[in-house]
Image 1 (cartoon, helix red, strand yellow):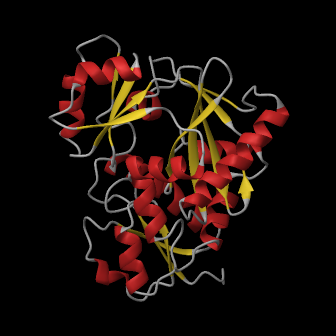
Image 2 (image 1 turned 180 degrees about the vertical axis):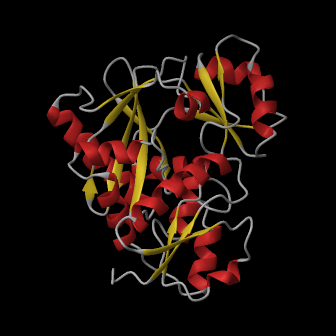
Image 3 (image 1 turned 60 degrees about the vertical axis):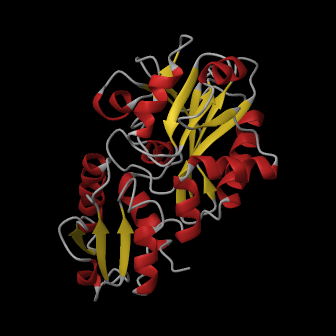
Length: 301
């Protein structure tokens, strides 16, 4: 007996990130089965949630809306099924990049300058105020879906309209161009920082999932004292949103070496391109051990 009972691996779902989730979930399921754990595939897009009755815990490998935003977490709470990752509040907050920024601003954590956009925005004024390049993104999507890099004056409105197709809440964010980084968290352990060097102009959907020329540097090249300082602050940023279990904090560096927190992912990818497994491996934890550890941390609010 594994001690975990009957485990549902939730993946697929109905969000724009369904394909990535199917990939993540299949790998998680295989890793659990390979350790003799009584794990079963469960796609909420194809099965009613009440079919989860009788399961002892759930491994959430859903990404995006209805999987990472507190919705499925709330359903599992009602059913008294312990689940992996953050609770309802942290999941909902982290999925909303705007409200994440408000929390971090209030706590004095460094974030890029940003503006909330609407159809009535003075786009030229915002371009001038934030400077170019800037990034326009739907506040409640993941995997860079609906994100545009605005490089020339006059392009902001079109970028807003593209993002608004995915979410009525849209933010414009000052481009911080000194490097993209991420740091995984598993329990109380903060994993080594990974530097992401896409061959594309920025770390978009293609670079994340479909290309093999994105470079991932771990060690990340930062001085050790600086890395430890950022890792400690990343854990603070995660906990500030009430994060628990496991997650991933993304941040940017400017050319002067200052860091700016970008967002938290509360149900990180577990594909062969994914970052938390990469950081775990650098810390001496292989993929099956990582999956098992995440499952051990499953909880109810």
